[in-house]
Length: 630
Ligand SMILES: Nc1ncnc2c1ncn2[C@@H]1O[C@H](COP(=O)(O)OP(=O)(O)OP(=O)(O)O)[C@@H](O)[C@H]1O
Ligand SMILES: [Mg+2]
Image (cartoon, rainbow, N blue to C red):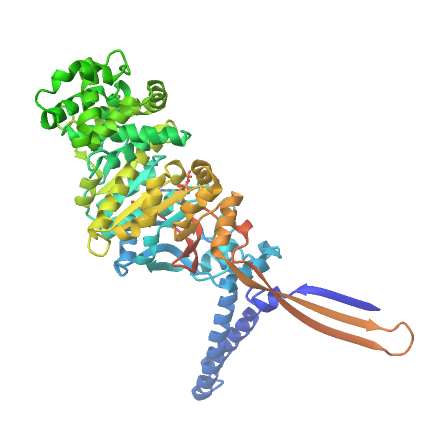
C-alpha cells in the first residue's frame, strides 16, 4: 500500500493565518492568576508566595496575550479597511513635520514577503480566515471593508501596518503618473496632492478636462485652510465667473505664438498641411509684431480667414519708404508686369507692385524675415491655401467668437467685464493657484485645444525659466496637475515632462488607461514615450490589460517560494511486517510579478500600489478629503 500527499505549507510559513491557539493558554493563565488572587484573598497562601505566583502568571499572561493579539490582528487585517475621511486641517497637521516630503497616503512598504503572502492567499479560500466583523472592528483602528464595497480587502490586508507614507519631494520632480479606472479614486488622490502643493505654498496650476466640481471645491477649501487667496478659476461654460485668461499674452518671438495655435490644428491633419499652416500662422504673427500690433487669437483668426494682404501691404510700404530709392515709382509699369497675376481679384495693384519691388530689388539689399514669411504665404497656391485654412477655421472661430472670445482675448477697456485679466505668466509671478476646468464631454475639441494652447504657453514659460536658471531651488516651485491627461496630451506637455524638473515644474498626470493615451498619441510606442517621462507611479484599480501590464512591468518581479510536502507510506502486501514511511519537503523559487496582475483589477476604491523614488514600492490607501467630518 502506498500513499502520497502534497500540501501547500501556507499555515506553516505564515502561522498567523490560523486559529489563535494561544488564546487557550491565555485563558488558562487568566484562571491561574485569578486562582492565586483567590488564594491570597482567602488567606490560604502568604503574600510572599502569592507575589511570586502573580509575577509568574502575569508574565505568561502578557506573553500569551501578545501572541493571541498578533494572530488575531493579522487575521483581522485581512478584512481590509473601509474608505476613511480626512479634513484639510488633519492633512495640514500631518504635513507640518514634513515640509520637504510628499504624503502618499496610509499603508506600508511592500516587501517580497507581502507578494509571497498574496500568492499564498490566491491558493486558499481566504474568506475562511476572516474574523467576525465585530471582532475585526474591535481590533483595528478602522472599520473593515464592507461587503458591498468594490475590490478585495486582502491586498491591503497582507500587512497589519497602516501608517503615513512620506517620500522626499525631490523624487517627484521627474513627474508622477496616477492611473486608475473610473471611480477608482484618481480625483481623491489628486485632491490630496493638490492640497499638499497648496499647503507648501507652490504655484499651482490644475487642468481638469472633465471639470469635476469635487476637485474644484477641494482646491477652494485647501486654499482657505492654508490662508491662501481663493483659487483663480477659468471655465468656458461659466464665462461670467472666474478670470479671463489670455493664452497669447506672453511670448518672446512669433514662433511661440504659432506653436500655441498649432494646438488648434485638427489632430489628423496631414504633416505637410500642418507644417504649412504653422508657417502661415507664424508669418501672420511675425507680421503683426513687425507692425507693432500684439498678436491675439481674433487677429490671427482674421488674417487666416481673409488672407494676409492687409498685413503685407503696410509692411511693404514702410519697407519701401525706408530702403527703396525715392523715385522707385518711375518703374511702376515694369514692376506691375513683373508682379504677375494677383492671387485674388480683390488684391490691389499697389500691393502687387510693392511685392514685385521687394522681390526684385529690396530683398537683395534689405531682407526682412517678417515680409519674407508673408510673401511665401502670398505666393502660395491659393487653392491649396484655402484647403488648409478651411480645416483650421472652425476651431479658430469657436475660440474667437461669443463669450469664449471675451474670456480668451480680453479687452481691458471693456467697462462691462469686471473679471480679472490673467495670463499664465501673471499667475506664476503672482504665486497663484489656478484651476482650469474644461468641458471635454460635451465639447472635446475645444477642451483639448484650450488645454493644448495653455500647455504650449507653459512649455514656453518653462523654456524661459530654464534659460534664466530658475528652478525649484531658487524660485517658487510650479506644481502642475492634469486630470484625464489622455484628453489633452500634446508635444508641449511632453516637453514640460522632459525638461520640467530643471525649470521647477513638477507635473502630475492622471489617466484612466494607457489604451486611451495610445489612442490620442496615435500608437502604443508614443504612449510609452509619455509614460517614460513619468518617473513615479500611483496605480489605482485598473481593468485595462495594457495598463495592468504597464503597472506590473513598472513594479518588477520578485522570487516567490513554492513549498511542497510529500508524505509516503508504504506497507508490503505480504504478511511480513514491512512498513516504510517518509516525508520530504521541497522548496523552489520562481521569478513572479511583485503584484499578480489580476489583483490590480481588484483594488478597492481609493487604494493604490505605489512605485516611487526608483524602487520604493508601497501599498497605500487614500482617505477622502472633506471640509468637515460627519
Ligand atoms: N467627498 C466625497 N464623499 C464621499 N465619497 C466620495 C467623495 N469623493 C469621492 N468619493 C468616492 O470616492 C470614489 C472615487 O472617486 P473619484 O472622484 O476619485 O473617482 P475617479 O477615479 O476620479 O473617477 P472618474 O474617472 O469618474 O473621474 C468614488 O466612489 C466616489 O464616490
Ligand atoms: Mg476623476
